[in-house]
Length: 131
Image (cartoon, rainbow, N blue to C red; front, side):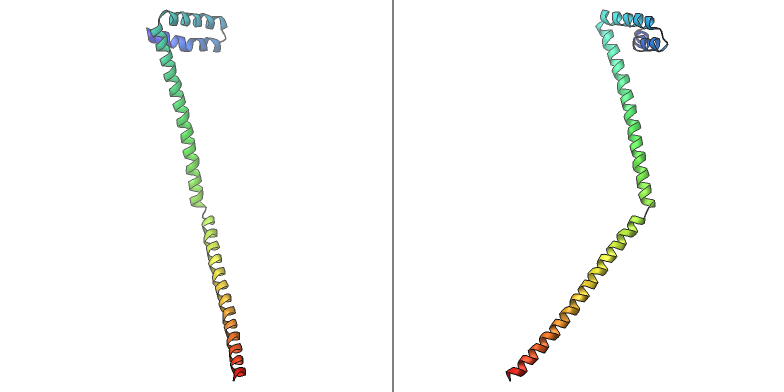
């Protein structure tokens, strides 16, 4: 019996207003308020049922949001897995840097060889002058 009254108290005013009978909604609301005021345990039961329903709705909403986020993340993961162009660009950049470094070292070595040759020539010329 209490369950029927709880359901009526929770949903009847909403249904009555939705159906366009504002006078009936006020009468049902007054009946519910009187029943809740007459028995505090009954009022607690109604509040608990309302809280459970609210928590269930919040949990359902969170599950839907989580599922949507998981789907978005899965789609992004699939897109990145299919789009390997960024990997090709990364390897190309690495090879360009490596090739540039090798060319830099080769040119530096050539410059040092020329400088050593010039220093030997200067040393030989200085040795001839000293004799």
